[in-house]
Image (cartoon, rainbow, N blue to C red; front, top):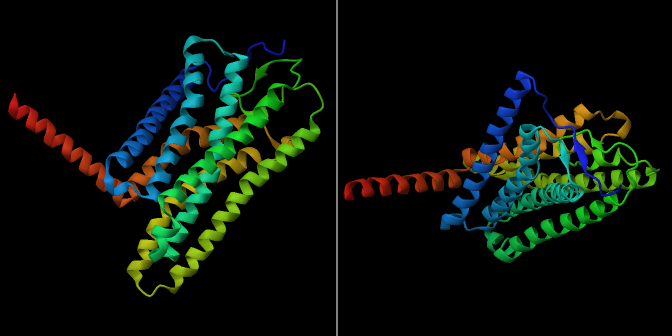
Length: 313
């Protein structure tokens, strides 16, 4: 029936090599969760980080935290229990969440490039052009736009006829993997989805490229070598994150169906659903002086508190 459970193929089998890889995946998952939670807590706790740029960064960390939590816990539960099923509602929920979070991250990364553009090209007008209201509007646009797009595709895909095997050749309910189970002719819908995917990836990429073209032009005109270094340092973290995220998304969603294999789809998904959310907080924490300073401040206060408690006892 249409509401029957789906079967997730998963990532690993029972071999020792795959057991090691599973353990490594769990370690990476825990690093991703702790790193993104720490970034959010630091931005909330340190008043110096209460700026539009760090507000956007906290939302990026929240998206990464939710993204990695949408897929890995279910995969780990199935692997440890030996079961491979996921309910119809569970699959639809997972499908909606991962599409929403992925789309929201694409939009947010594009809008974050505008923040960098204003900071470098119009520093004296930054507080006017990038105030708290503008930052909030960017976040709402990212979440709302991606959620509407995801809801439409989730409703359509879950109402398509699944009359054959219900085995999803993936470790979660990924959109292309679900479409492969449909027994009807969905060529027109697949073409529309392919065009939408290109638009959702190329438009943010074009927006980011335009922003950094203006930034590069401004940096070239700077006379101070120190100002140029500061400008590049300000943008480098965002550029690295953008390269990882959009590179993995382009590999996963912009290739024709005839050139895709289940293994390639899994590799691409592992990169943008596990590796990228793990690297993002590390990149921003290690390469950002303000975040690193806030981390040292929190750790310093914790050490002082522990010493004071020891003295009292």
